[in-house]
Amino acid sequence: MDAKTPSLSAVTLARLMGPQDANSLGNVHGGVIMKMVDEAGALAAMRHAGGPVVTVRMDSMTFRKPIFVGQLVTIHAELTYAGRTSMEVRVEVQAENPFVVGDITHTNSAYVVFVAIDEHGRPRPVPPLEPENDIQRFRMEQAQQRQAFRIQQQREESAAVEEQSQRKEHE
Ligand SMILES: CC(C)(COP(=O)(O)OP(=O)(O)OC[C@H]1O[C@@H](n2cnc3c(N)ncnc32)[C@H](O)[C@@H]1OP(=O)(O)O)[C@@H](O)C(=O)NCCC(=O)NCCS
Image (tube, rainbow, N blue to C red; front, side, top):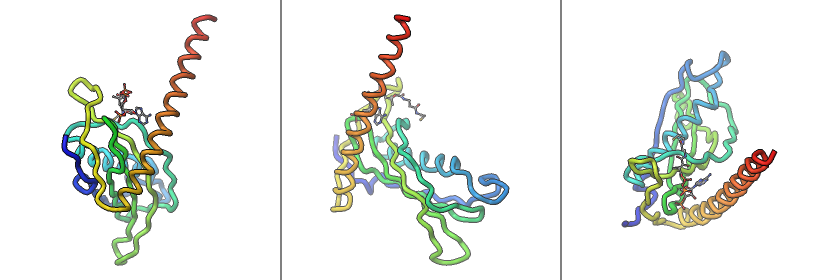
């Protein structure tokens, strides 16, 4: 499979926030932004994989600034890592006041992991990721470390669940 660069699959989505996205004070719900993050990330992953993907992990998301009704939310998603079947996508969220040119706030960043799947829902191999510059190379190295940590965590969680179910069987 030929390698692909991050820019080949990068995606930018934009949507104006309306009253249906917010509470009575006009603050946009975090879940609305999380859904957009998942959608933008999945689109970038689908482009890289050339087929369907599912979300396996969304790293913690911190909202540094509130987003309000009337702001234009722009989400940029770009691949930072491709394993055999998994991909990490860096997603950046910006909120803009469309009345004032340049009034843009970076509200948060997140990392989301997707797995490409075949028609039976089983993991499917994806093309390698080829960085084009030093920033992308640096992000890829960091992503490899994050993914190694997640896999370790996943193993520990699975072992704990297994141990618990064995204990219940013996009770
Ligand atoms: C994604 C899914 C198909 C993976 O199946 P699986 O049997 O765990 O497959 P594997 O153990 O072979 O893992 C597949 C890849 O996912 C990675 N992975 C699995 N769990 C992970 C986690 N918690 N965090 C990061 N990566 C993970 C593995 O490292 C592997 O990557 P690699 O092939 O690049 O090395 C399965 O877990 C699933 O269907 N999950 C539900 C997904 C879903 O419904 N999401 C919400 C709606 S989109």
